[in-house]
Image 1 (cartoon, rainbow, N blue to C red):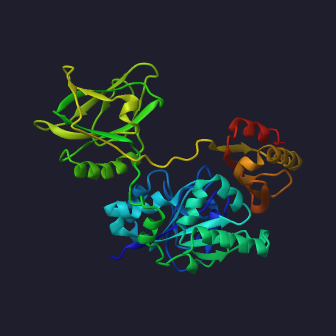
Image 2 (cartoon, rainbow, N blue to C red; image 1 turned 90 degrees about the horizontal axis):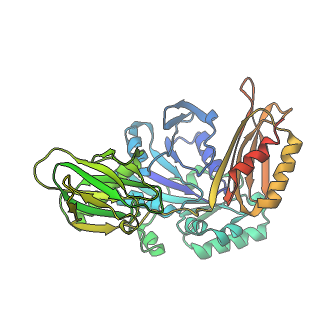
Image 3 (spheres, one colour; image 1 turned 180 degrees about the vertical axis):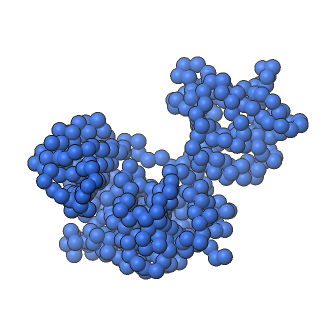
Amino acid sequence: MSRVPVTILTGFLGAGKTTLLNRILTEHHGRRIAVIENEFGEIGIDQGLVVNADEEVFEMSNGCICCTVRGDLIRVLGNLGKRRDKFDYVLVETTGLADPGPVAQTFFMDDDIAAEYALDGIVTVVDAVHVDQQLGRSRETEEQIAFADVVVLNKTDLVEERRLDELEARIRSMNGVTAMHRASFGSVAVDVLLDQRSFDLTVALDRRPTFLEPEYPFEWTGVYRLDPGTHTLRFDAGPDPTMGLAVLPLPAATSEALEAGAERCVRVFAEPPACVRAGDQVTPGHHVDAALDAVEQTAVTLLIGEGTGEQLYGLFCEHLAEEYHPTVTTADGATIAPVIERAWVAAHEHDESVTSGGIEADGNVDGDRLNQWLGELLDDKGTDLFRMKGFLAVAGETDRVVFQGVHMLLDSQPGRPWGDEPRRNQLVFIGRDLDADELRAGFQACLV
């Protein structure tokens, strides 16, 4: 069976990725596309498109299916493989705050994924109205353009022709090999986005020589020789209140075995962790979060299972050893030193000042009060508000009001009729240094 082609859809918050995605999901283009969707704090794909739904996969009326990412991309792709008869193409929509490099990396670094899937290209949606402002403040926007095989310059209806020419020239100065298409409301033919066979690993390595150096969800590993039985694993208090960890058996104390174990551990870390506290048992092969005492050492019981004689185990820790000083001791108190240690490149982290504030409230909002509150919010936080999105129940309106905003630009459109459904409001605000409680209080004052 041939490998499934994959396109990565990326672009900064508010560029129009979801609009383009919904166009793909509703058009009858003849393809059976599996969509993996992961948006930072966003309200998901309109549930009115869903025909059948289980915990993680939604089937659409045009033959597409959609997966919402609640775990690691590798795990979701692996689960999709069990439904291989349902689709012949995969589209991955990244969060608007994502560097697409590590996502693309997945299709080269994991042997099982590389055997099943082939990266076809990276499509970046660019907001023609706000891209200058975003390039000045966001490294992710630069990365998204630099890695693009196809750029969709969106919202062109809001920008003068001369300005669009200037934007195209700027984008080409950053990435001279990308194909470029102008669009408004994501109006791009599916055929110019998919089946392009445009991703070139050589070009990716030219753009970022470290492209094939993997990032991991852990920062340190120590390899220990352990007898079957009970051991104690201790951590000092550190800057983080928990320590994510996993213990995996290893065949040898070599760099090659450790690197192979790290790739296996990526899958283990993709599983939801079990929370453990001082005195709880930890067994190999499971992802756990150990709660750390804020002042003293925290000790958990490391239980090594059946076997005879010493065996090698890798202790994969979320944080560096010098921060928390992990120690392993035997039942009689003897300390076991690691045979080898390894620090890893940690996974990319977003700007911690960027947060998401969600609002859900039943009932109707007063339109005048809402407009006044939004106006005051934009005056105060407009440049720091990257994205606003949701739907509203406005008093006197029989339809939902679909609400969209990017920086200082707001838009609203009528949505589905409420009918007999309870009237409720759901909004998401994404920006820098937002006060979620203050947002909720401001919105509550707009309710009738």
